[in-house]
Image (cartoon, rainbow, N blue to C red; front, side, top):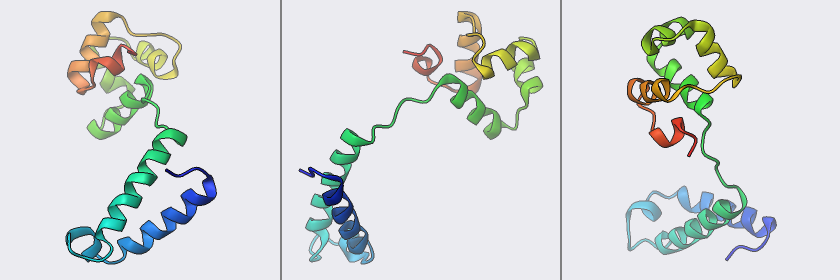
Length: 119
């Protein structure tokens, strides 16, 4: 168990050293293989407890999908069947999509319903 930020940084540095030798990653018989796996688990546990990653917001995910699909606000409004001004309100957080629009966002942008519904 890592108890302090100083311990975390020291162990993280050791993990980086161990990663320099690909044998430590691929070869279970390598000298550093076990050490790397144990230290990596400790680092992961510490990071999960001290640097949690929050769920993305609907706005963040929609903006990412827009970039991935090459959509602008007008293109997204056409895809969802709502006005461009309504899309702007969704993207700025001024309003929430209706259930019908939320369903379309989920389906047409391949976004998990739990993110769309904020659950």
